[in-house]
Length: 346
Image (cartoon, rainbow, N blue to C red; front, side):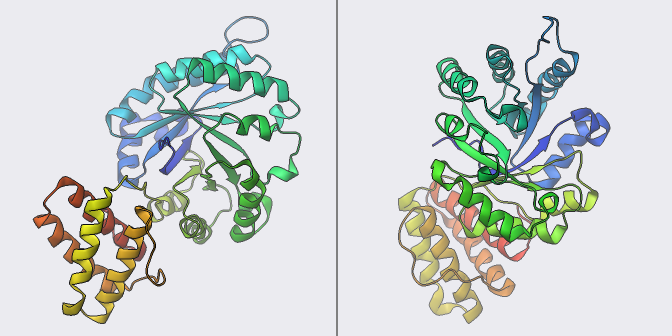
């Protein structure tokens, strides 16, 4: 299963309007935020206008994408490229995707909204062509929050070839609560049988409390990836809320090493306080879930006191670990506990 979409990603529509277009400042802030990657627009439909000449607007997006992508990748970020689809020229949009992939896009996101409605044949052709040309590229599908409200969007045709669905859960724009938007959105997309990595609202009237609730809901159902729309439109408070509510990508943990860490952690219970014991059980269960073995009891949120004690224990286990795989498990568990109780992630 491709995992480029896992973790926390920020959408960028117009790079020249993020941090004044200063690339060094963008990368510095992205590092400070702790995000996994960025989603940069590379085309507004075809790169060539219907008149057969370069479309200046769409070309500008591509030029910016090619300019800044290498720097984000060198800084360690996953770079997704996205295109707004009109589908008036399927071959033209395929060419735009091809250029973005050649420029370093780790994955591609198709933004399909009103202009994709009623275009089943075009979407089917697009899917066949892009999979023929780029069989291994990860493809995301970004569209309206509630699929059933927009039945003429060719959802079935997109679902036939995309890897992950990214509903635009813009609760404040819709006028619903975060919980209702989240519940109704995932229900409307469940029938397509694809992983869901929703996009949250980080603009307009979205409160930081609602942003935190959105991430909490994603974690409760086990989603592995989220994104935010959008960096250029977010207020300072909303940007800070992205940093404060990260969804971390889950690494592929070694089963044997993880079982050994669980065993070592639980062996410490007899010497631990009740708060630490609670956090040990929580950590053991999260690690069990990560390697797909049954949990014991319930996943109860640990106290900050207990989490801090177990973090120290895990750091001690990291020091004496017999393998890199054990160290990876310890590091994952430490950051998970820090995230759970609001301690800065290392």
